[in-house]
Image 1: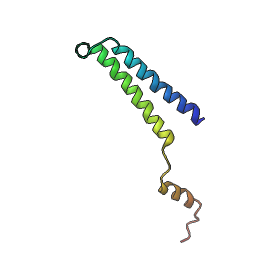
Image 2: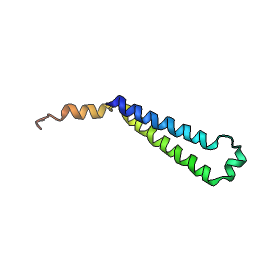
Image 3: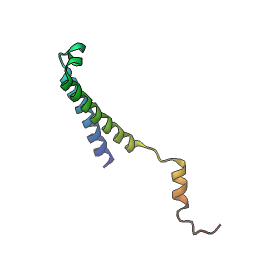
Length: 80
């Protein structure tokens, strides 16, 4: 299941990057800076890319040592 989620997130990232490049294809910098609609389209695709990247990081987030410790002590009966 992790592989399918990861594949989906990476696909969204790739599609967003492809879309952003397509929006600016053939434009020079002054043309891009003069075209607010294209700027907004690129910004939106970068947001999509960033959100997918954040989800990829969550898939690979390691469990901290303190989390492992807490899970080991959950069965503690409360006796000290």
